[in-house]
Image (cartoon, rainbow, N blue to C red):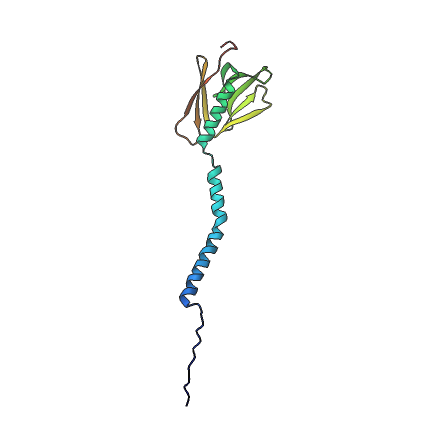
Length: 161
């Protein structure tokens, strides 16, 4: 009579718990990859989003720079809308008439013949100009902003100051 050996082969295999955990990790990775385009779009929007305050500050700075080569000519009121009349020196030193006024909710810089214009600030409800010595006081009211913006620009009345 011989001894019989019962040989049990040890087979390595995944347990049920390991399968569940691996499926959970796989699902999590797939979900993260599916959300990546949305995250990239949101980050792009936040990087390139420029607030209205920043745009307004840039436009005021642009006007400040523009007025450095201007001569004050007057303030007119047409249909309860004020227009600032100035002369601006181009690159050749030739002075040309310009008007700053609100058109369709946008503060615009126009030439006197209305053939060309440059939008400066959008969303403008009202603007007023006032001459104070060699300065122009501008009070700008935006459509969705409670507080008006006040700024004073240097703009002499003649070439001599």
